[in-house]
Image (cartoon, rainbow, N blue to C red; front, side, top):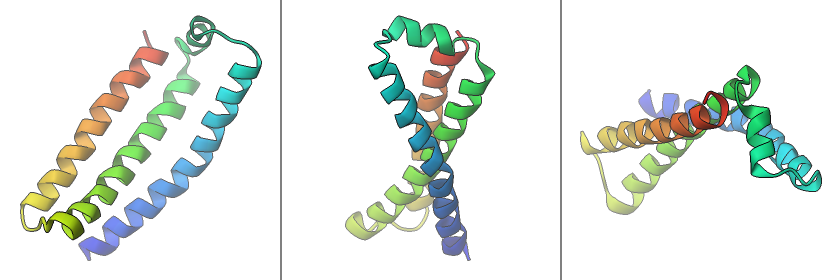
Length: 110
C-alpha cells in the first residue's frame, strides 16, 4: 500500500511540476529577450504573493518528486531498506524543502 501511495505522490507531483516548468521557462525566455537585468527581475518579484505561491508550489512538488525518485534509486542501486530507506527519503525531502523555501523567500519576500 505504501508503494502505491508513493507512486501516486510522485505522479501527482510530476503533474503539478509540468505546467510550473513551462511557466518558469516562459518567464525566463521573456526576461532574457526583454534584456532584463537580475536587479530588474528581483524588483518585479519582491513582495509578490503570486510569485511566492508559484515558486513555493514548485519547491514542494520538486521536493516530493525528487525524494521519492532518489528513494527508488537508493533501494535499487545501494540496497537500502528497512528504517534507513524512509529516513533517507524524509531527510532528503526536508533538506530540499528547506533550501527551496530559503530561495523562494529571498526572491519574493525580502
